[in-house]
Image (cartoon, rainbow, N blue to C red; front, side, top):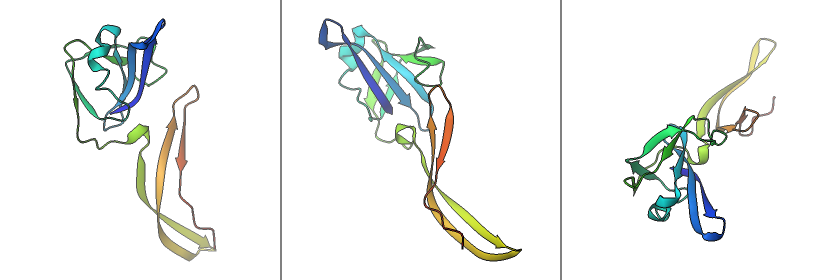
Length: 148
């Protein structure tokens, strides 16, 4: 799935695409940068859209050239003249890198060794990872019951 896409234009002709850069993500949340160079942009420009699921075949993989700040991956995909892009119908992975999980949480409230309340709660939990200079993970929980 294409989760981010940038089109860089020619300096003196903003209607002409000079290069296309994308962040691709698979169903296991692995991300990689993909680059379409100037000479191949007309071939792929219409078939590459942000948010679309695609299948790519006959491409190259090389060391990332300056794109390591975008994703935590040392490699990038390079499109060739022989690269084939086809639409993909099914994608079961998270969209935009955010995966919502439904977990069962059990809370026990103990008051002087006596269980005063025991209940099952269902809340949506999202683990949000922000990739920037400061690595951090935040856990977002639904509303919790107040203590009795």
